[in-house]
Image: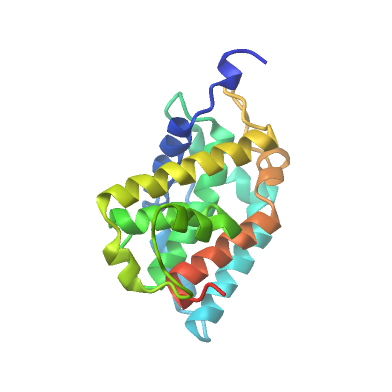
Length: 215
């Protein structure tokens, strides 16, 4: 493995997260809806809020790993040179879903605290551990007041822990390669955006932004 292929860092992870977050809030990537537009379309569906969110998660699981959906991410190739295309693609797919769920729950995505919670949800089943490690005491229920209590230092701590956990996760998968351009095709990104991890991330977002239940 060359030196360039081994320099994936938490800084690169965070750059990719920030890029994907910004892109998910604004339309323009290969004609894909923004998180706001996605949330609006599902809020129009029949049923309770939880049922609407479940519908969104099911759609994401069904579509995210397909070649047709991934091919629509051609705009992802316009990236800062330091961010691997496949990494940014995976984050964009997941962050757009989580951001849409947050919007459906009435949260302001322009709030840095909310953004940190969106990032924490990318840890899936480990999101609660990340929040607790950052010093957030939430007992057995996540309430909106938790967001209010998050300080600037805690935001930094959450982001740091998320970056480290995601770095470890993708390092174990071994699919990040900074030494060459990686085309966005279903076989590559689809293997990373699997149903299990997508469902875990969606369920974490639902608990944080919709139900408040962590049990």
